[in-house]
Image (cartoon, rainbow, N blue to C red):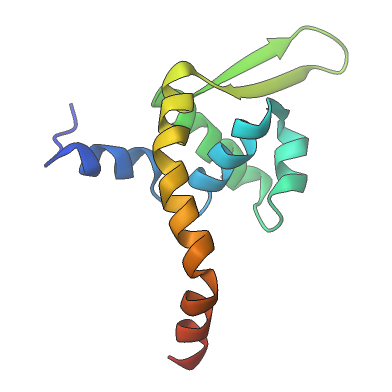
Length: 110
């Protein structure tokens, strides 16, 4: 069992990385198929997307629904825990929106 120093440590373990918060953001809008997520998140590879979705599913914030049809259809959506996580991330996103220009300018210089 993973040992965390605090709740923030546990939360960052779930959403850490470049793509997980963006996947959660996309799924907060509506459930999506893998191909829709790839279009929504330019630059993510199929391999990384599947890996990140599996990790989010393992951590109980995303669920996968498989439709038995030809061709097979898989849809990902947030679980109740994922919805609560999304609500917790929204203030961080708001902060990013408010400070995006300043952050971009600082990074362009240094």
